[in-house]
Amino acid sequence: MHDVRTATAPSMSRLAAASLAGTAIEFYDFFVYGTAAALVLGPLFFPTFSPVAGTLAAFATFGVGFVARPLGSVLFGHLGDRRGRRPVLVLSLLLTGASTVAVGCVPSYGAIGVAAPVLLLVLRFLQGLGLGGEWGGAVLLTAEHAPPARRALWSSFPQVGPAVGFVLANGVMLALSAALSEAQFAHWGWRVPFWAAGALALAGLWLRSSLTESPRFLELDDLARVPLAEVVRHHGRLVLLTAGALAAGYAVFYAVTTWSLSYATERLGVSRTVMLTCVMAAVVVKGALTPLMALLGDRFGRRPMCLAGCAGCALWMLPMVALLATGEPLLMFLGILGALLAFITMFAVIAAYLPELYEARVRCTGAAVGYNLGGVLGGALTPIVATTLAAHGGRVPWGVGLYLTGISLLSLGCFALLPETRPVPVPAVEPVTG
Image 1 (cartoon, rainbow, N blue to C red):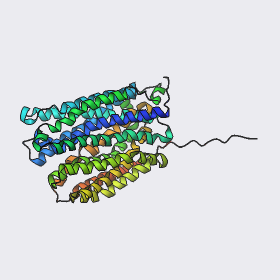
Image 2: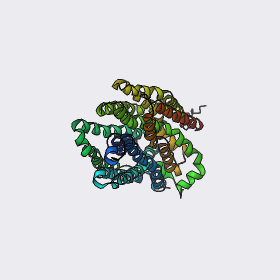
Image 3: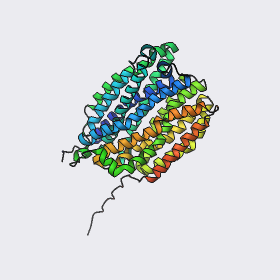
Image 4: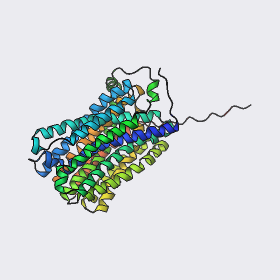
């Protein structure tokens, strides 16, 4: 058995901060591609397509990142279950950061022809591999250090990272689109956020250099030889249920943060600056409320929060698309905000819920594979399906609302089949007197 080092409260604070910063940087890399796909990649890399087809092709390369994420979770999950959670954090950050910088260096179709979208596809795949490993490592290192009574709270800080990464990515895009002309932005401005990923990755590596290994991993003296084989053999049903349960969260999040950008700018004529501002403001509120929702998960349980969030998504999707279709900034903001509040009601507790569902020896693989398969089901196809449905509908994209409602109901059924995992407090033993 390994020597076990326990975490004091200050070290938990440092651990949470480092995990949050790391996930923020990696999701910055992932989101900046999604924003670019919605705004500029279609004409630059698929110029022979119609505007709608070009956007669909750009979203297809966006979806490749989701397909790669389960593969990354298998690769890095094996490393995390065999060698520890900490190495996963370093290697996944290096891979995602390097591939993101490289995206910013790819010449357009006009310069190198078909090689341009091919390179884009390969680099997007590498981004997805890195992000597939990042979530499992960051969440497990935090969850396995955290005291059981506050596990959802501490584990929620890596879940704040995606909101921070999204705001960073879109904030840079917003500043550039406001400062540059359309021609300058299309020529070189969109590349700047990708180049900035290099500096962010170096900062993340510095923050993570002092992290200690998970005490739960150090306690293990019987490591899984092939973690994926054990997960498939003993936890296959659980992986499928968690993937189905998480699909709604991914679908809703990427509908409002990626598809809505192209829909509002191309179909409704809303300016890019206005739409980015609406989405960013809603994501800021979502990020700020994440720890509060996690506290409720520690108080009332993981499963009730997930069921409530899924139900909220199912009820809100049709009102959301109706509000988006108005083209009015305040109403669009309210539609997006309602969707993200329902989303974070369930995803704030997922970082504690998924690790608790799996035994420690295969936890890095099982939790990460389930989480990232949910991304394939809900995130990879949603921008493509939503763009297609909106293109063949009227001004109000009711088909998109029905599609998202259906996924939410599917996830609700999967959550209903999962058990509760919140640790039960051990009652204090009264001293015996006599």
